[in-house]
Length: 469
Image 1 (cartoon, rainbow, N blue to C red):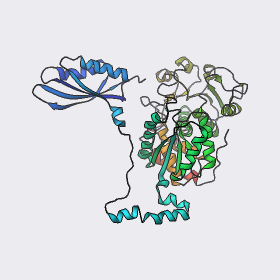
Image 2: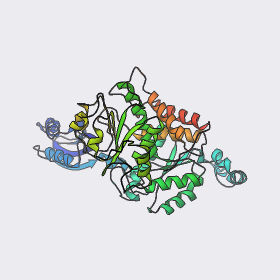
Image 3: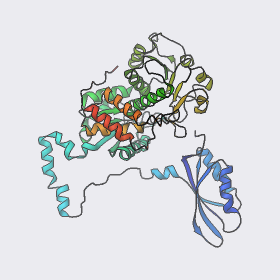
Image 4: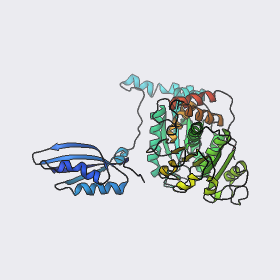
C-alpha cells in the first residue's frame, strides 16, 4: 500500500458544477481534504449555467480514490458523471504493437518485402542458418517468457493475468535498449512443457528472457534451456536483481568505507532472487554471509534442504548459526532482503554494526520501514520509487540484452554479470556518490549503454559459464 498519493493510483473524475458560485474553487479543497493531490483541472465544456470539468488527482490506493470521489460528490452542486482509473486506461488494448520497418507503398516494394523476392532471402538462410541473425528480426528480438506462477508480488495468477506485466517488460526493452521484445505467456507450469515450448520457438529470437517463473522450477527451466539453445537465456528475477544489488552494494560500501571481503552480510530470502544475489555476491568476493528463509538461518544441519538450499548451506554460514533472522541481523554490516514485508523493525536495524547498509527490496512493502531503517543505518535502499536509492531491474536487463545481442552471444556467463554490475555502479561518479545516491535513475542516459558495452566486451573474451547447484 502506498503511504503517499501515487500516480499509479491516479484517477480522472468528470463532473459538472454550476457556472457561478464557489463550486469550482471548492474542488481542489475537497481533494486535498481527503488526502489526495490534484495534478490537473481541465474545463472540457462551458455554458452559462453549467461547467463540465475533469479533475485528475493522485490517491494512495483504490479505497482512497473512492474516498476522494465521495468528497467531491459532497460539494454542493457537483454532479459526478464518470470516474476513470488512468492506469487501466493506459492498458486498454495493450501497451505494445508491431510496426513495419519498411514501406509497402506499391507493388515493387511488396514484391521485395514478400513474395517473390523474399524467397531468395529464405533460401540464403536455408544454406546458412547464421544468416538469420543478419537478415531477420532475430538479431534484435527477445522472447519474454512466463508461466504466470510468480508475477511481481501477486503470486501464481496465471498466464492471462501475467500478460500486462510482460507487455510492460517488452515496452521497457524497447524504450531503454531499442530491443524488440514479445510476451510469451504459457498456459502450463510443467517444466518439460515449458522447456520444449521455448526450444521450438527459439529460432525466431536472439535471446530468451525468463520472467516470473516460480522457484524451484525456474532453476531447472533455465538450466535445461541453457544446455539446449544456442542463444542466451537470462532469468531476470534472478540475474537482473543480482546485478542491481551488487552494483548498489559496491557503491554503498564505498560510502561507508568498507570492503565486501570483510563485511558480514545477512540475507532474507532463499528463493530465485536470493539464490542469484548470493552467487554473485560470493563471486564478487563476499566471504561472510548468512542466508535466512522463513524457517530461519540456512545451515548444514537442517534436514529440509533442496538442491539450492544445500548449495547455500555449503557456501555460507561457516559458523553454523541456527537461529532466526533477527539474531542473524545483529552486528551485521549489510542486510539484503528479497523476501517478505515487515519482518524486521527499526530496533533490529539498530542492533546492526556501525554504518550499516540496509537493502529492503520486498515490494510494495519492504522488509522494514524505510523511515525506521534510515534512523539507524547509514545507507538504505528499497525497490520503491518514493524513496532514494531505488533498486529496479530495468537498470540491468535492457543493457544486458543489448550487449548480448550486439555480441551475438550464445550464453550468459558469470563474468558478464560481474561486468554489468561494475559498469552500472560506475555510472555514479565519485562526485555524485552519497548515502542517498548509490544507484543511478532508470532514466539516466548512460545506464543502458554502459551496461551494454561492459557485457559486449566481456562476451568478446573467454568466460566461464555458470556452475549449477
